[in-house]
Every structure is written in C-alpha cells, then in structure tokens.
Image (tube, rainbow, N blue to C red):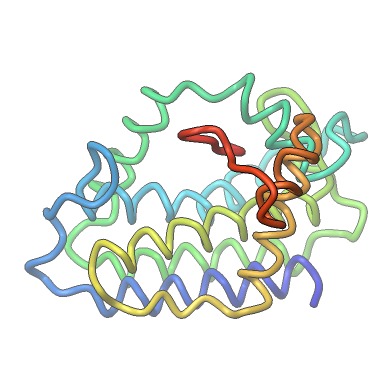
Length: 202
C-alpha cells in the first residue's frame, strides 16, 4: 500500500474512533497534561498539517531524505514540548461542538490536495523539504500511536489497520537505528537486553 492510501485509511480509522467518543469523555485526563479533547486535537494535526503544508510553495528539493530522518533529526531539533502541548490544546478547542465533523471535513480537504499533488511533490516543513510520500509516513505514525493513546484513555478499539500498525513499528525501529540505537533495540527485541528506562524514539 502506498503512503497516500495508508494515510487515508489511518485517518479514516481515526475519524471513526473520534465519532465513537461519548459526550462525557472529552474532558477526562488522557495523556500527560492533555484531556481527551486536547489529545484528539493534537492527533487531528496529523491531518491539518498535510492540508496546510500542501498549500505552501514546493521548496524544489528535499533536504530531509526520509521519515526516519525527520524523526531522528528534524523532529528532535525543531520540536518544543511546551509548544506541542499548547498546540494540542488549541486544536482541541478548534474541534468545536462536533469533533467528528471537524475531523471528517479536514480529511476531505487534505485528501483533495494529496490526490492532486504530483508524485515528485516536496513538502516544506520548518524551512526544510521532504518528499510528500515520506511526510505522509510520519502522519501515519502519529495517527497510529495517538489512536492507540485514545483507545487506552477511552476503552474504545482504535481501529487502525494492521498494515498501518506494522508500518509504524518499522518506522519506529528505523528511527532508533538512525539515532544509533539499532543494537540496543535488537538486543531488547530478542530478549538479550533491556531498553533504558523511559526510552522513546520521539
């Protein structure tokens, strides 16, 4: 399955999950300092950023080679945890009284841009460039991981396609390797060692 199709299926599953959230669940604690609304808002940004970035000019050439490089270098260097948390809260408020409708509408807009983008389209992120297909791999990663977070917070099945979950696992392993942790991860996965406490690839 190509990146665009996988993004669509993962985003559609997320949309269905949001539609199943009960009215009394939105203000419950979900992840860290986020309520469920803020967590869903943050996850929705995996769709909204596709829309907003594809409305920017094509930078002409990629400076980030792949999704692994995005997380190993760009995400680490350009991400401010406090700013991420604040944007999640803002996006949660943006969802309004009908979050499922807001997510569905955003997905329609994003896919309209993805479907009409040329195969060689480069996406501009923070002054850098990455191929659209590789950027969509990062969006699938976000949708899968945070849909699982939402599932754990609500008790609802996350509904993410098994192929998307597998691709997310493969990307996580690739990021670990890009960060120089391939051997540590390999030993942990084969029962020959343990990951450091609190280890994360993001």
